[in-house]
Amino acid sequence: MLVISMQFDKAHQEMIRGLREGIFTGAALLVAQGEEVLFHEPYGALSGPGSPQVTRESLFDLASLTKILATTPAWIALASRNREILDRGLGTWFPDCPLEKRSITPRLLLAHATGLPAWRPYYLYSVEQAERVEFTLRKIFAEPLQYPPGEGCIYSDLGFMLLGFLLAAETGQDLASFTLERIFSPLGLAGELIFRPSIHEQRILSTRGDEPPGAVNDLNARALGGVAGHAGLFGAAGGVARLMGYIMRSMQREDGFFDHATMRLFGSPSGFRNCTRALGFDMPGSEVPSCGRFFSATSLGHTGFAGASAWLDPEKNLVVVLLTNRVYMGESDFRIKEFRPAVHDAIMQDLGYGETD
Image (cartoon, rainbow, N blue to C red; front, side):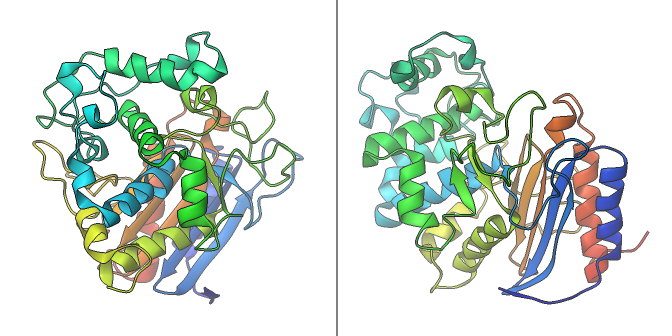
């Protein structure tokens, strides 16, 4: 993508504010419209004072952006070959699945409409690494459902863990190898979207001050070896933006990387009761979302607990990627929740879409 100059004074000042107020030690902000990168700037340092500066090539822990940059695209690829796979019950892959969960489908999992709880600390259990996947699968199967499948919406890491396990059962490949072979390498993104980055990498932002960078911050993902359906991916802002651009163009055109009809299905509201999400993606809701006030209602995106977000607006042909290491300041520091929409609002005002304050 060709980088061109454009003034983003409001957005830049918001990023400087984030550094000044200690919301993160390092960040990157990228704005792209169509094929053009309008703004791409790194901010701050990889960790504490005296550490190297963030560059455009720096890698961030993407946390739950794994859901929309790896797990969901993998299921788009599977559904492009056979749409029926989205509506197979768990019993298709796991015959020993409990009866009340056999009707749970990949479609329900992608929409967070299964009734599974949001999160459990499975990493606390002492389990041999070779048995960790089977152990986690059994624990998820044993969880009581919060409501009947399809009758509500609880954002669930457990559901996306299951999507990773289902992918492996269907293809014989784990999420890392499948996405590398089928998505990241074909798109030239293998160096910018990475599971299990080498500890010798010198461009990774720290998320825990007492640990070397490169160990995934999410402890359930770490227990699963750094590759899981809900977290584990690391990425540079440019790579995140490029993949979001491919997703957006596949929604808009017949000649995109992903199958157009399948991408349109995934990018539409799921239709389940009390669920405002698309399949795999967040959409702007009634409350102020992380993308702020001015993104179109058809926009798709997600956030990541470590401090990341990525949004696309197909009506404005716009992609915005904001990556930070906000958890380095403490996992209970949630100032990022007001910071993210403020940055996105500033971008829209810089572009002339939102009213000025």
